[in-house]
Length: 530
Image (tube, rainbow, N blue to C red):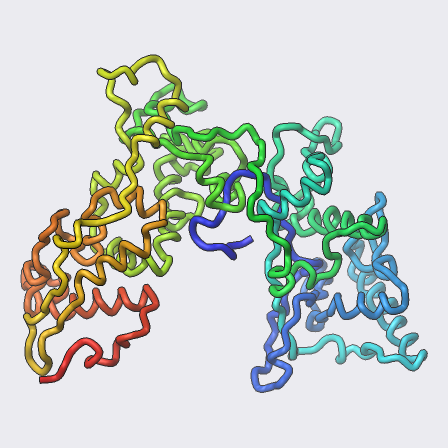
């Protein structure tokens, strides 16, 4: 689902069901003539008929089929899905006029016989019809492109479905018993469909695409048949961007009951691999994690629990294990390129405009300090206090979280210089009067409601380090010229000179934060000519 919501508005706390594409085997990757007026036409219901590639190389280009266009015509004639689709086990099969792909000749004949016959009959009835010749279906160039958007079930949709089915989770959720070779409902173990159903069908586990349409579309059809309100049964109803915007959103969704903890330690101080006889010490303290808070920030459990709903350490051990694909716990938590990791998710949030001005350059120019690590890896409660009594991990984690202090401000206004005059490079232009206090207070105001920033900006001077990136926390950090020379320091050839440092810092910040003025090409926007 995607990430239609940004940053901390993504996911945890319920079981998600993701509906994928409507019968789409491909999206038409052939050449689209951009000079044609038709090139601007886009649809969400395009199905690429290329089933014969299962039997070898295609002899002709695939056929682009407009599903909703055909269903609309059938509806006017009081015909339904059964016109094209057969049923098996009281469910419509997505394949056209067949239950299985038997062999190339048979599949090809089904399409040619059924489609052409229908088109000819329609034309004989003096109605607008489709093509009957090979070249009119199998085209090298296409004049229409797909606008299909991925569709999924966020926590709002999940709540609406759960309420409609009176919280009978077994309506959708099931597991497979290898011994009896039957589906069954495992109460309390509900998980997203994606944990079993992948992109492609593997043995008896059908693909997510098939699972979604066999279950979801079939349920919608049967519900409509009872004259009850139901979800869409056409392609655009789910996959058109405008249709998705029309879906009712429940803002105050009750927390899904899945026996999840409110708070938890992400890892323990000591871990033992189930396949090993050795113990490994964790290098840092355990991380107190508010599971309850993160459920509210996100819209699907899969943001973190990408394989199953067990604890991260069950797969990602300190040493690495086969179940976790040898990704160690430390790596799983810190991989910047992974959205499932803590730092990866936090980095996505840092790309928001109110944060990106500082973080776009900050992470490239400074090393992570031990103090930064301690924002998460908090020290245990002191043993010489009453808190050292026998308490469980959850209580300990809750107390550590409660002891954290959010920083929502910076130094006092009078301690922040109102204006900073940049006059170290006077030549063609006059000095620059930088509205220093205004910039600092604006940055603070932009993130005052950002809980992530407030907890990780652990000092009043943290906001200052967006510009003073290599300076210690201080009310009076050293000037830029103390590090950046003119043009550069010979002993540090990779360190930019003073002019480059100023322009890189200011222009990059404006660009990342979406500040339109002054533009990079307008020198007079900052400088006044002598």
